[in-house]
Image (cartoon, rainbow, N blue to C red; front, side, top):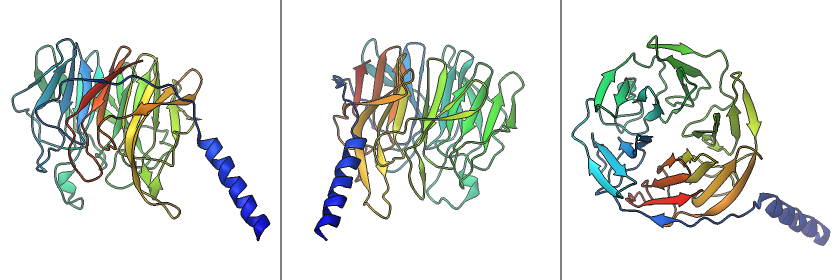
Length: 320
């Protein structure tokens, strides 16, 4: 029995050592806060501003305005009402042809198909105009991951029921097509970001929180990369600077061996070395459903909610 306990103890030490990752502590700078926090919102940069669209505020309602942040002046403003319905867990993809956004969810009862939104829009920040485009045809619309390849917007890991279908939107033709290559992950609440012309996607939930990390390559194939550190997470925030991809916070639901918990870590993924480093913690603490956005070598992040559902309105940045 003593020998057995020693083996178990030794295996535990080995497991702990394997989970350790290099540290590269980043200084976190506090920015001005918006007048209201939001959780499960869309976030994108266009021109010299960052936009927060949709999401849920503390009273549980879904505002139908844009929050606009100016990094130059460190100030927030709020737009008038938008032409699209309020929602949570939509997706937004900024391109040189405008910002393409939509999808998401517009209610509280997950069993009503009508609450899953299929509308798809182009937003032109220069003229502040909105154009309704062809609706997204698949039933899964919540918490999709989207990316841009120069001509098309790709959609993966959207949820209504679990699927590994991938769709793309042809911008010039205003047409949706299902891709022949499915996603290697059948999850909800995954994250992704584009860095140095490469696209990465990972985490999410299906039966338990996942930590897989993949690259979508130029030949439209999936390549497994180094897993995200930790026991798995979903509802994290994710964005990229010019140098690296960042994953922040999230929720580990739990499994047969652990209880659930929330993360407050800031993780940095370097594409060239396929490696992760630990960069510190989110100052406001454990957070899920937050947002992040990269502008050159600066990463802005914040908002979201804590484990009790209290909405954060904190806003930060780090220099990469």
